[in-house]
Image 1 (cartoon, rainbow, N blue to C red):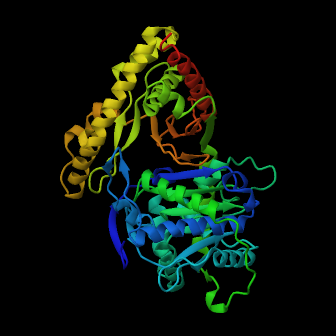
Image 2: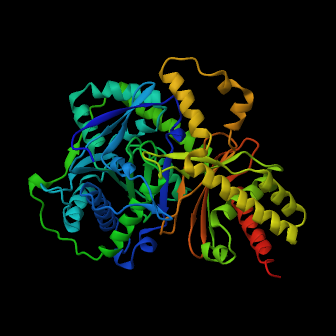
Image 3: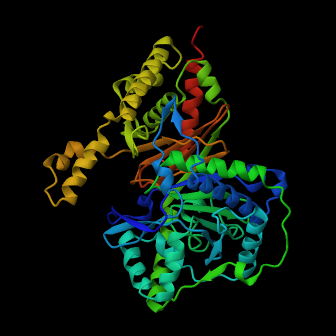
Length: 522
């Protein structure tokens, strides 16, 4: 972990908010996620969850975090260094990444931003009841809404970069930006939706639900944002730029588990001394900025209407059933996705799954290409004769092929990151991009219609990411012992399939495929 501030250049292009690639962990409610002792109290829950995240940060800073492994193979731990105290800094054509080791978080409530000191002079987290006092102070001080400056971070990157640079010229704004950028993480105390508002909980998680809800109660360039709603909805918004799903998932699992163990504290209403009070962070906003905020609000509202999100909690079986049948849960689910695609679209759809490369130093991810001749044979057989031994054999072969390609990719033999590096090296060195990358065949290989990833957490929750292109689907899944949890995201299709339709078809595929597996030994 770094002791001072630093910036790292990060090349980006003109993209919509969807391409910031936010991951979201969505927990149903405070009542069901923690214990009944939480009693759905927003501030008490927020204090317990914050304490859990700070405990994990302390483990990183002190070197107490145990080594990650997979099948006995150690994984690179470097990504944990960027989990806290980091932020993407908006720029024009190019963002930068700032990293600072600080002692504060920023709490956002009703669009107000407050700096809250959460570590003592020895960098040890303050007690949970002290956290509660700080958060309750912010809660009481923010009953009326402030100008939703956070909406600017939902804008097109170049637009946000220009407005950020203009606002930062003001010393007051610069001080506020520096506090946000250097914070360990953001904690967002969200308001409940207005009466009769049809806001999907995941919509609030991914996008803040729109300008009339919580989109302004965010700073989407921050690596970690925890949110706790007054309606009991809890989760996290995550910027994928610096770290991947594994470290983030471990941190959130620790934070929620820690909160369960430490949620029975009795809040102390002792008066806070002035020196300990949270500090209000202010913005100097002129007419140009007000117009930019209003424009950003209109854009995020249109975007919220355009994005569809759906969830599926599949209760019929989980990892245990698949393991008993001697089958890879991940491979089985990937074949269920292929079957769903064929049923909905009449053909195999270009599909990719994320593979971690953390067994290499500084490794990030590569793509597992999920469609194969073996998967196509299984899907076509399933469409014609689902309950015969040939289909069972085709399913077994397809899963075996998928596992082989998964291992091939995880050991550094995938093609996509190598080719991407070649292209970016040419761009960054001012050289012509090789003609290969302009070939229609190569371009077509990059147009995935299904993007999927397994993000396993020990919570009743799912992970969302915004869809990448029109009529494409993000499918993310959490594999538990006795159930499977899926999330699906897509844009409102002009001639495609709704997200709810996709999850319904996926459920049918999972049910039908379990019948095929039960043929074994019969």
